[in-house]
Length: 306
Length: 306
Image (cartoon, rainbow over all chains, first blue to last red; front, side, top):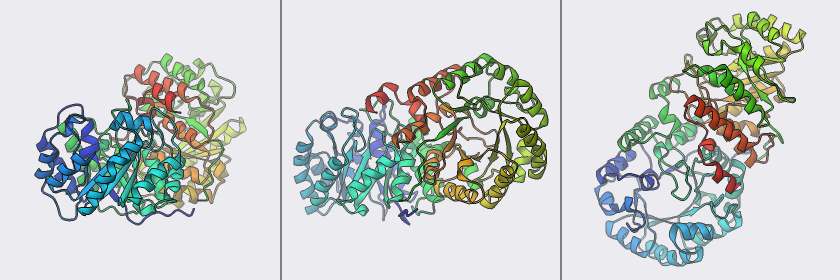
């Protein structure tokens, strides 16, 4: 095997945003703030804090300003926020954010259903957003959704994903996250996609973002690690889901990713025991089942074996 | 990558035995029979039907004879049974079985707690069992438990696993299943173990058996497929667990394995849609949560995408 495993992985925790935006019930602003602060104490380097999307589209995130202002930010931890357009960027700048993320789907139908415009229109919309963010020296990440399959259009061509990734990279976006939003991909497909995109963009600028709808997320991550990917998105307790894919479970659980990486001798800087406690905390607070296998297994047992 | 993926995988369904023996409530004999018959209709080639263990140890399997006699066996499907000793073999022979399996732990403490003897004593006990089974031209499989870690002794040396596997192979055992009984292993550990054992025994005679306690099972399977393993144990709906590892979830779910293999272009002969239906059937019957991610995702969605 000529695997190219990285020595260290940067984990991007998306629980507070990708996770909580899909919660059916209302989550208190104070809970969101405490959740983010507890996550920062585990050693996670990047915690996506919230989204400056219109409250009309995602009422769960209407308190974005209050959440961002309320978090006591730790040195060395980044707290990016999602912005869907120029108005979102203005709000984010007013809030004093240092890093933003933009997002688009790779198929026309998903783009229309999710962000209500064509793929080309979404790019037109993001061009000035990214330009202004760079001018203000913000970090910029781009999410591409449905990279391994679309709930409406089915299979997705890797060259279409690579083309979009290249477009964002050419605008100076720092990092591009490849999202299997509906969790449909399997490991060789994930490797093939990553390899195709890495022909256009240095692998160091690519992140992988898997949902565990069909149980494939960790296998897909392992497969992508073999190619050398070193940025992985995940959500503690497997929070999240996709409102456009009923029956879908959430993001891959950060605890399960950290457990695997530790077992592989790959550093993350995260304290797994503390992370498990945060996962249990947010699940108890939201009265939600913990989707992390590691989180569900007894902490005492974990301590005994490792 | 110089992965050695097989073209075809033989799935060994352990749900009716490894799964049901850990159910807290009583399962009707008729349910067990119907469950096995429905599994056979999915195209699964091997279904571990029951265990001729003493009802004193595992009361859930006291109806082994009735289950085995009640199943209308399909041509091309094998229905092995577990036997713990000479008495179990006699019962199995009287029932007319064609394939048996024996099992031992690779650490002294697990062996004592699980089958109430030392590792050496278990080998002494199995030697005449295997000899007689071969004389009667039965197929023989050996399970090794806790190959990637023991709940009592912690890490396990790969050479100890390889030594035991070699002992069974030298007695003429057809297949040796390497079990991560407490689900603690991660992909590189799984690869290293498999490679170490494959130095002693041809890979074609080795099976892998993962539990999903820490969510690692499918990633571990993918890693072992890269080395060319072509026999995988699993349980529909992720049935099972280990009474000696509290908080443990069950076996890796057959549905999730089949989904991954299909996505990788590896044949199994299994009809995934039928398999999902069987998983839902047994979970409804046992009023048990389906642990298969694929089983929990909507079948209609699955049909739409693939």
